[in-house]
Length: 78
Picture 1 (cartoon, helix red, strand yellow):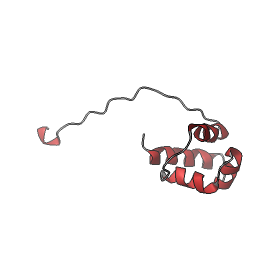
Picture 2 (cartoon, one colour):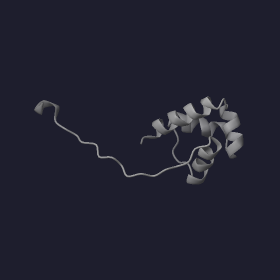
Picture 3 (cartoon, one colour):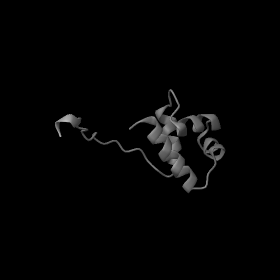
Picture 4 (cartoon, one colour):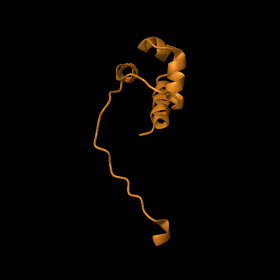
């Protein structure tokens, strides 16, 4: 999953719970700027610990599953 998709999901969850970026940042011990960068998918690095804190603050947890294969095909062969 790309960072921007993760960011979109975090934005959606935050807004559903009527939290501002500032409130989420305060709840997780980070800055509003970090939350903003994460939500835009424009963050170089984020610690797993912080990511789990963010999800925990939103009442979600991280689940790891096997990646489903994505098959590339030649559109000219159709």
